[in-house]
Length: 428
Ligand code: AMP
Ligand code: GLY
Image 1 (cartoon, rainbow, N blue to C red):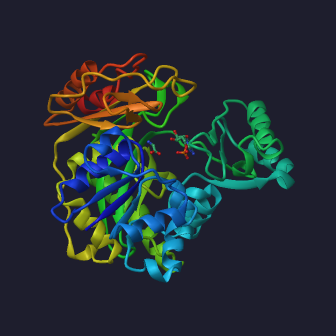
Image 2 (image 1 turned 90 degrees about the horizontal axis):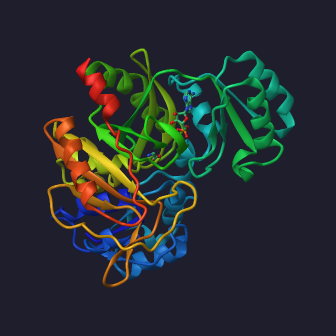
């Protein structure tokens, strides 16, 4: 099979690494890719939301399977576009239709879907500029902290959690009346604050059957001890010690099964990944968010634990044959540490020469790099995700941190406390 992966981050490098191992994989293309994906497949300079150009490339290169890595093409309807064109019917796409992608593209859609399908989530109400006063009144009925979410895609920045009622009202005004997040905040979901530990669970579904992929915990803040600004993710660990069989059974019974049967009932053709952002509230899982793709850097911790041929699974997803497959996960622990450019997630410089990539047993996934023909150069905020697989969490962390120390570029920054909270849990 010929494959095209859309994206340029660590997630897409991890997908490329895994798919390239499949005996089913003939040619592998990544658009636009990075210096890491270029060492496995062929990078192509395509815009990931230019569906016509993507379709032309697929036809000209006999692509059999298309895998969108990030949410944008899915939310903008790439699957519907491919379904609508008679000349693209033979190309498999591992992703949900536009309406299914609304689970990530609209917080209000996701909350209403959960309410209709009795899926545990924080209580909520949605407001627009016309109902701003009612929004203030709703805030007054809640206890701090307050959770305000821009309805639409806001590059991971659309959730604000003010500590005081006054700040919450100001924030609501900024989002609705001043369009703080543009169109994305023309509607705002206000919800109850859930106290607990977060974990992400990943589901692969063909719309009928599903597998749970390994769960992971990510580290979103830039600073150690979960301080400072939010980032795309500074590290990930899988498995997560508190996620035992009994918790996973609750996730399956209360969340995964009702989600998949809800999608079926609502005639939403959902093939691909469902990323459940969950809060463990005293042993009970609640959905904080749905994403319609894999996480980044979670993918870089999850895929090394999956022993299957991923391409075989993705093909089965697209052909609705997942029921004929089984999944095999190694019990080993994966620890992923992300190296970022100094200044990220605010402004940072690009084009720094990287050294120390070669050698060792860790997997070095490129997240924001490019090649100038001679050197590997930094080309983004998150530059590498270093993953290691070992029998224990301390060993996996040790390996990743050792490799992370060997890689150098001007301004390199990383969090040194990835997984430390989980070490405490597993020791207690
Ligand atoms: P989201 O983009 O929906 O994942 O939200 C970003 C972050 O905000 C989450 O990872 C949580 O840490 C936090 N968050 C979102 N919703 C809630 C909630 N209802 N209660 C507590 N924290 C939340
Ligand atoms: N690491 C969080 C995400 O991919 O959304």
